[in-house]
Length: 182
Image (cartoon, rainbow, N blue to C red; front, side, top):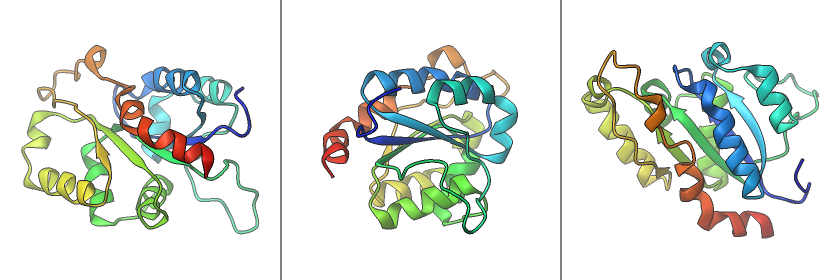
């Protein structure tokens, strides 16, 4: 496990066929000196190996709201990486919908000034919907850093070998020093 004074990165995982690759991002974040906790959308839990992720991070995966008075299972976030970010999550987040813990954290991050980077994962038919471009524009206007994913063809399994898990870290790198010293 990394130094307890190292900055803490929330990795928000959405439900998609590549979500089980999140360990790649966690390993790269650890190599850069981040401590990592994973927050999964409720549907993403069915796509990831919970035991493996918890063993890799040293923290429980969060997916549901905690009850009042319950201990906080994760330290506060110094930065947030959303990968893979689905069409649904991107559009709900941009609209200010907070119906899951993951979306609640993302909506609150703006007001808290937490640096946030997102690496989308969706198909070209979804990306053609006008709401998607509008959502990306709104997120950019909020200071969210958007990754370089090129939407895959519908029903093509999304070429998981070409998904750049670590691009969110590239985007967050300029904020890492600031997070460590604040």
